[in-house]
Structure formats: C-alpha cells, structure tokens
Image (cartoon, rainbow, N blue to C red; front, side, top):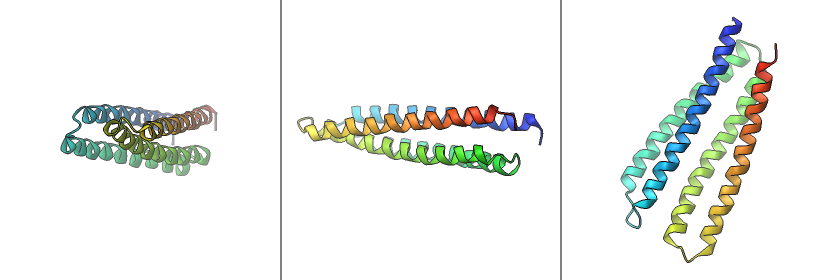
Length: 150
C-alpha cells in the first residue's frame, strides 16, 4: 500500500480519538444536566444519553480496532497496533471510571452531609487524571513511532 494510505489511516485514527474526546464532553455535559434535575432525577433522558454515548463509543472502538488490524497486517507495523491495544485498554478503564465518577457525584449530591461521598469523588477524579496522563503518553508514543520512516 502507498505511503499516503498509511498517512490517511493514521489521520483517521486521530479523528476518531478527537471524536472520543467530544463524546466524553457530551457525556459529562449530559450528566451535569441530569444532576440538575435532582432530587427527582430525569432518569429517562439520562438513560437515552447513556445509550447514545455507548453507541458512539462502540462505533469508534470498532473502527479503531480495524485501523489496528490494517496497521499490523497491511503495513507491518505491530508497534503501532500494540500502542492501539494499550490505548483501547486505557480507554475502557476511563469509561468505567467516568461511570463510577457520575454515580459518586450523584451520591455526593444526594448526601451532602456525608464526607465519604465527597472523598470518593476526589479519589475517582485523581484516578481519571492518572488514566488521562497514561493515555497521553500512549498517544505520544504512537505519534512518535508513526512519524518514523518504516
């Protein structure tokens, strides 16, 4: 395959990562709106948001895995597909942490007098910060390796 195909594939990977970032932003904004409906939460709208975000993440993930296979099979770049493997694991962790954070935020809002709930929110936020730093490192490694001549 031509070098332009490789570059287009890498570019598409970065577009998908940007779409993930946007999906997280929408997920967070939707959750904030959901929290504002408390104490009688509008769960139906939130459930629909979770459904739409889940579909978006699944679609992105599926295409990222296709890119991973192409990089490995068509371009003989197992180094890049390994970065994508690591990234997918960390993205899954981030999504799980985000869901835990949303639940913790609701618990903290519902029980403002209980410091344990506030502490749990802080702990999960720290875990997300660490996860995001690891994601950034993986993306930096991918960028560096993808710019190297084969």
